[in-house]
Length: 534
Image 1 (cartoon, rainbow, N blue to C red):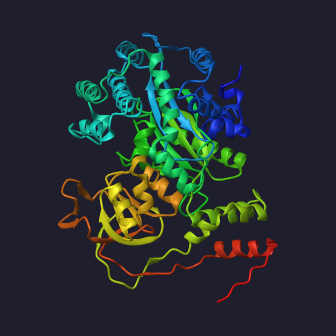
Image 2: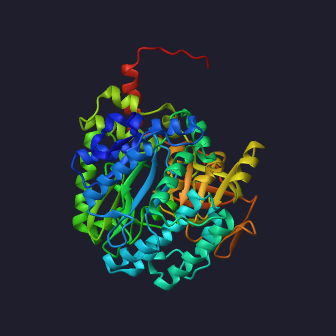
Image 3: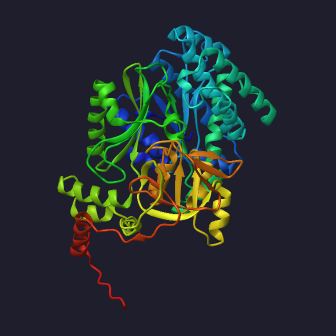
């Protein structure tokens, strides 16, 4: 029988086409004795078979998944669906190539009223258990049952304390879950199943389905990724970053993804789960703050980051969770970076003896070099700065304000330059982000969805501009006494985070020594001469 499922300890980084980037990365970290929660990966071959046979699991895949789940139970000492000591798992996508945020994830799977009570007794923390259940019901409703995200978000937005979920009490969380259930039944005409194995079966199918959702298809078209590659699915024991003040979650890069500086860069949130960081609903703290608040954990993270970069010989993008002071690694992959960062990282890694001169040249794509030639705002022009956010992706762009991804796409097709303004972006906004000249979000940090996707596209982006108050209904945003309506011009400076009123002139950027060094290496290694007419 075909092997559709691999325990983490059965894989390695060479199996990326089969196990996807996430699955192979988890296997490689597990084999290196890094602190990785146990789990297994369902292969990309299984995904392709799923589509080839009218969205049916291939023969033997489900049984192999259940057998692998028993291995997780043995390693954790917990039982899936047990009311006394419940095992909860995450179900995550992971294609062989990086597609950040395009496919789906379900966390806290295995919770129901029985296991919820068991989790509360086991941890002695009823609020934590209900917060985990609230997250599960919301994600399952949206991702598996197809309830529109905005309808579930509206439930949260109607709650006092929205944006500070860590402060919601038990009674408020219970009311939120009850309201979620009402919305889900009204929209999907079914409830979130209580049976853990049925939750798992539906979640795996939903992650397979997300390979062909609209945003994934658009992303593949823009980035020239094959449609028949498929996604793997990783099922992993949950660890909880929302288990109290000495818990947290974060994303870190082993070098700065915007500038290429050789410093660990990232963000984290205390008492939160991973989706809180990337979704942009809360603005996280810079990773440097973690050195002050959790110094021992921070030092362990830095050591692991250095090991991973040396092992993979490239800048890594890592996800981690801290559960009551214990660090766990949840992902490592080659990090997205701007053109400026790509050039500096390639040059520095050669100078550090990590890669050859030829590798350094090949590491930088032509479109990344082109990003370095993007315009910057003329420093001699007097401007009216509305507000300043976090400079997530460099460059400068001016355009008309739009608040909707569909409208951004429509106006761009008509030849208009537009700036997409959102509270935060999510993968459904991807087509509007592609169409826009720049992206601005009021919430989120440097590792939010908007920031990561914009950097990957080389597109100007400012995030976390918290002074901006957006009114989607009135199609406008305000900053203090200033009001900017849809269709008005603004200029976005992704180099320093400024949002400027009106259309501001730009000038060509200056070329630094890293660019010149790489060009000299390229010229020295080329075998082909090019002549052009001028």
